[in-house]
Length: 394
Image (tube, rainbow, N blue to C red; front, side, top):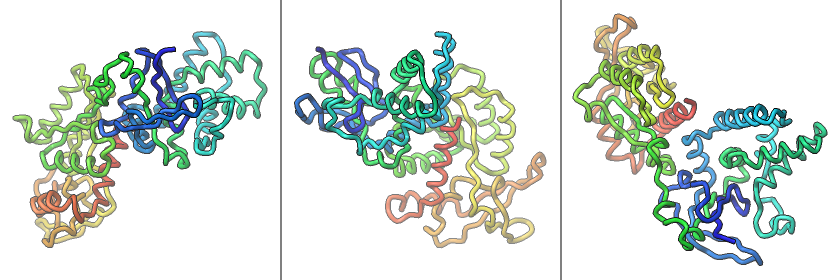
């Protein structure tokens, strides 16, 4: 019979393999996800053995970073459908919306787990295929050949497409995604060290910032707010790791990367100030590869009316695009000193001043001192969510 390895949610199988022939799903998990999980065997036999287990909401975030966002899976679905239609000279009567709307409404908790039709464990592919075909059949009548074509197409669909759609249903958010690998390891088909989660270079994302404070703050915030995806990110700052610094050299760095065949996923983050916007505008004209993206820190509503000091005295101004650095997103209530932007040099190209927040060092010191205690993460969470969405929407 051989040894089975199964990816499932609840008792529903998303993907399965046998002996040493299986898809490696370790990218969905982290080392901390190795746990004793229930294995369901025939005759209602349940054994607790080693496996990987992670809540579906966390897996959803990982899928987005792996290239399986809702936008991505729609493209994959349509490309696969087009390819099969052209290859076999057929026209399978199914759309992504048909599949999405049906799968999204599946409440795995409500499915009859004692159904004799599925024995002790369900094949999610079979269940979904029947649901989808039944739903579409309400709108049109399939021929025997069309029914077969739809069934075969859905059976070979990438399991992450189905999994990503299932994660949209809040009724499934209490469930864990489980990868049962104990049988293939214990029977010698693969070493456990080859199963232990470790992302590849192509799956990880290198975040490049202007300075060390940006790197430290973003790294700590991702780890604190979203520890379930923190392993995706490596960091480097131009200030500490390269002999050339400043936004001008960062522009040259980006230009250089665009001309070589880089394997890494790279996200360059510029300040949302006059200097950063100037570089960003220059970079927009470069034909960048898909795995290299450049963004600025985001605009934020609190920065529309910010206290400033300059040659004309004190004022309240909109600093978005002129003086927004990482320190603007810190908890300003954590220090007693007055916080303001000081206008410095003038940019002739953009016809605006460059601004710097003060007291910068006190804000950074306060963050490192209190971020694990009582600290307002409202703006920092907004920043991290913006960074994640910027990469996912690439």
